[in-house]
Amino acid sequence: MRQLTTIGFDADDTLWQNEQFFRMTERQFAGLLADYAEAEHLSGRLLEAERRNLGHYGFGIKGFTLSMIETAIEVTDGKVPARVIADILEAGREMLSHPVETLPHARETLEALAGTHRLVLITKGDLFDQERKVAASGLGELLDAVEIVSAKSADTYRLLFARHGDGPERSMMVGNSLESDVIPAIEAGSWGVHVPHDLTWELEHAEAPSAAQRFKAMPTLAELPALVREIG
Image (tube, rainbow, N blue to C red; front, side):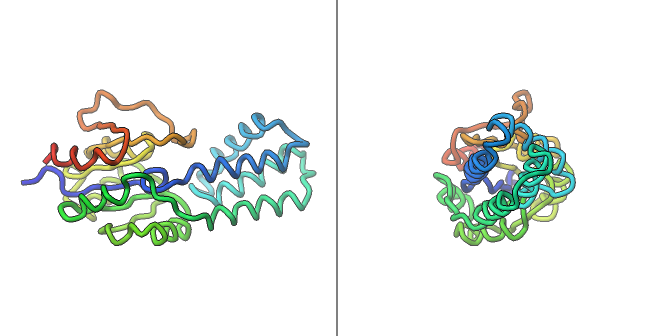
């Protein structure tokens, strides 16, 4: 009996580029408020707002846009010009329409595994935006299921790997975030594979669970099929 039957994939910065658009927009945001705050100070205040607002708005561009507006109000003592608010809103709309750029080895890795394993996309973020990116990426045809969730926890992986596979013990989660993709999947009983990205949101940073038997790390997705064959 095969040990591994189901493979979960993160989407943003695992299969396609994402964080670079947030960084680019944050630079625009700093330019809009250059008369009120230094870029480094503004970045720290924005991160604080994002952390506070996760429980209210969740992950994704809409929450990021609202956090930018909140930060603009705070650093200007409520005097932020209406044109700046309008520009922030426009920047958020631009993020929601940016083209999808798949990462190296994403398609060929999915193609190599699609015939032998159940492939499930498990992603956080705005529902409409994530659905748009799945469609625009052209990768949807290789996936057996797509799950867009509000948070990724051990319970999330237990539920989804039971729903789409043979339980977490015979499943694997692959992603760029140790905090969201790897650690909770291992806690659920799955393999957790870390494929780092050059840009990772600060709130997704965590220590690698190097002592965990089911923890694996690799520089690119190109090495995943070999690992899957090794596990059996």
